[in-house]
Length: 249
Ligand SMILES: Cc1cc2nc3c(=O)[nH]c(=O)nc-3n(C[C@H](O)[C@H](O)[C@H](O)COP(=O)(O)OP(=O)(O)OC[C@H]3O[C@@H](n4cnc5c(N)ncnc54)[C@H](O)[C@@H]3O)c2cc1C
View 1 (cartoon, rainbow, N blue to C red):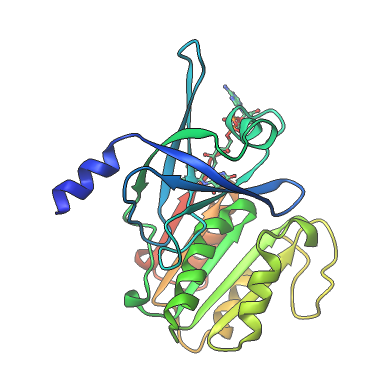
View 2: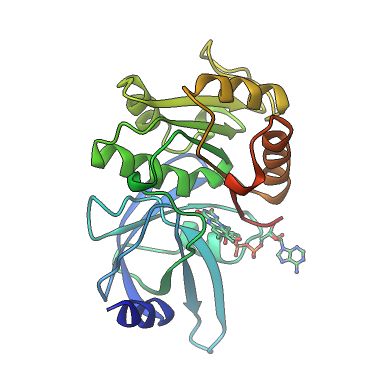
């Protein structure tokens, strides 16, 4: 069974776009139905491959935003980079019914399931929140009581992907805590921040957890991940419980 699963993961398979939902001015969710059964864990990603009629191909990685508990579709939340090749295809040309190729799920290190327990500290910058949202959705779907705190940094209030869903989950006050920080405008909420993540913010959120974290996950652009991981280590979080996913540039 394990061998069969690995064989499916290594293979490119067709997937249809079955839904498109605008999340923020720069981020849109695309929902895919893979041709083959697709089993994944929160935090994993897929490779997406586009092929032009002349044979030219472009391939990029995208984290899975959906949780494995809820449906057979896979949600990818893709940020538009104006000079990017693949993200502009999705934003400007992709339509419901289009078929692309994907491969996965990929990644065994940057994964959390409710069986891993908590407390867990999640730190995401921009679209780096995507795999962390999969973890938060999985926790909610399982009715888990594991303490999880998501520290999420975005430029503006309107650029917070999945903002209302995350605020709604935090309002349940069942062990999921949300801390937002905006880097280009003041936060409209009192208990959030309005600056780039720094060691003081990391100290604050660590103090909000009931106990030191069992695991910490950091995801985003290279510089963001380095800053957050360094601050965690300075705050005394052991390096061996910190897991990072870098989106590049
Ligand atoms: C594990 C993983 C998960 C990811 N998950 C997500 C996700 O959930 N959502 C998301 O939006 N993104 C995610 N990414 C990023 C994604 O894979 C792409 O990098 C992103 O969408 C940009 O691709 P693009 O083709 O649009 O841009 P590209 O064409 O690759 O360009 C990206 C940027 O690099 C610059 N650039 C391109 N080529 C060069 C060059 N030769 N020299 C210098 N600069 C250059 C461009 O100007 C542009 O600003 C993830 C990345 C990884 C590794």
